[in-house]
Image (cartoon, rainbow, N blue to C red; front, side, top):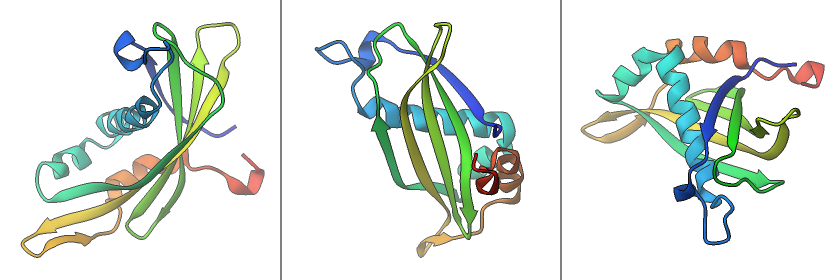
Length: 147
């Protein structure tokens, strides 16, 4: 089994719709929360860089839904590195309902982030910062083993 960065979130009523289940866009919002917590925990220098000229631009994100979540449940996002190439990082997210005896996979998604620098001419691609690359390395998916 691959190592994942795990982020737990207790779902609020605000995140549900009139039917009572979680509104679909919140799953993507939680990807951002997980990514930011990872930076806080493992790459604080990258966060400091964001205050200056570094930009982490979300190029794409998606989520496939398998089961509904509801307010007061706990969801755990398990993030892994799918790929780091050039100036882009692709992260995979598995969403689990936790709290019962067995965790249930309820959704799966991914996100691609481009590393950029802001300058007077606009934004320019830059390599993935060394601190971020090193922080993500232990979470890389091992495709050779099938995990």
